[in-house]
Image 1 (tube, rainbow, N blue to C red):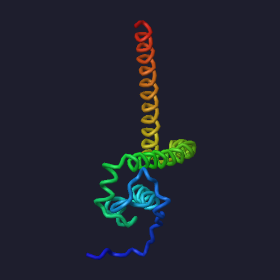
Image 2 (cartoon, rainbow, N blue to C red):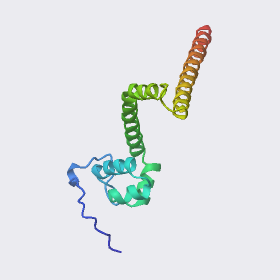
Image 3 (cartoon, one colour):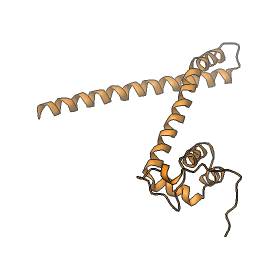
Length: 152
């Protein structure tokens, strides 16, 4: 059955330029296609949509995600970098969010809005307290473990 052409051209390495550690042949894909697949997996809602976007068979993409250690590592690294970029944006907006909550708690704001803002502030304070307590307990456990290790 003829393959459907997507209009995309995949860059190919010449036989002499290929990495001898990676076997070439049927099923091998250029690095650019793999990078495109990772970007598609990060931006599409489904694996099928990602496969279609990058021009790779869905089964191939799923196989890379389960069997190809390099691909799995690169995808995990890309996911971590994307998540960290998002968290950096959230951190940058934190001061503005706190100012908004503070404004929503002013006396002239409707009571239901003030209640919602106050509840949010209280929940954030509780989460912060819980996180600090957990970190403190973890430090105690680690110190105890180090003491035990030193006795051996």
